[in-house]
Length: 91
Image (cartoon, rainbow, N blue to C red; front, top):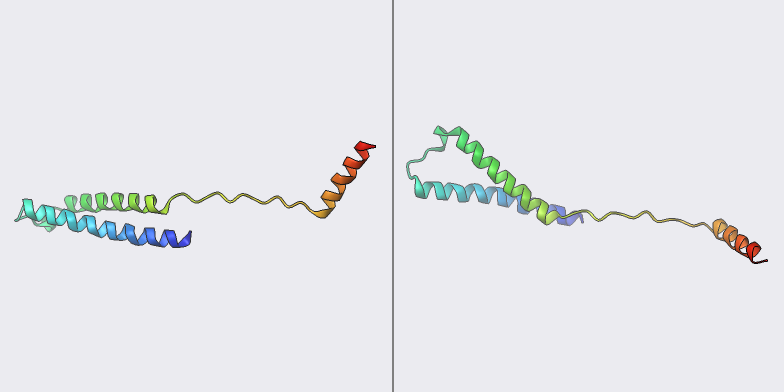
């Protein structure tokens, strides 16, 4: 399951960068004179949206950890004791 987390992290990071680039391309196409340094709030918004989308992708790929069930260990003494109890009930 560890490999799945690594792959999810890599794809989440690539999604983060890809969304930022995609938003940059769209903004440059619709507003050619847009300068990001003049609009710091919009830059933070783009980083926030990209982060949310990347974390969503990461969590979808990572998935839920399966619960590990504890094994109940029955010792030989317990088996002998139960057999003895069953034999005594039968008599």
